[in-house]
Length: 115
Image 1 (cartoon, helix red, strand yellow):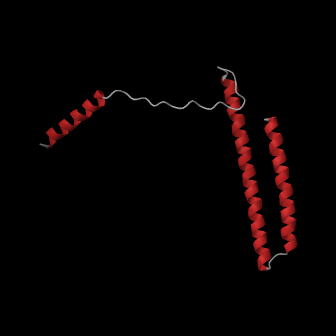
Image 2: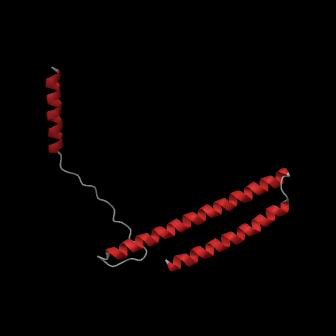
Image 3: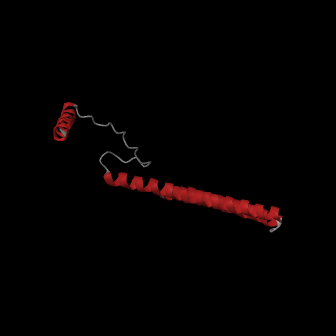
């Protein structure tokens, strides 16, 4: 009884497999890199993707720097509220942090032009 049920299930499965037409997914076209190389220029295409990846990596590192400076600012502000640090230290950290962020933004802008 069980063997017959298995055979019927296998036959129905094979019938369903071969009776349905094949369905192919329509994938979206990939976005070309910002350098937009010509058709058939595989080396230019790879270089463009590497350039765009480098820019994204640089931006990710800059975001981590921004978050790190914001964390330090909040930590120093909390210490000043608790009386463990002077308020002048919070001000100095704010000024130095702003200078570092401006300098990092400048370097990112220059690096984007060089790459």
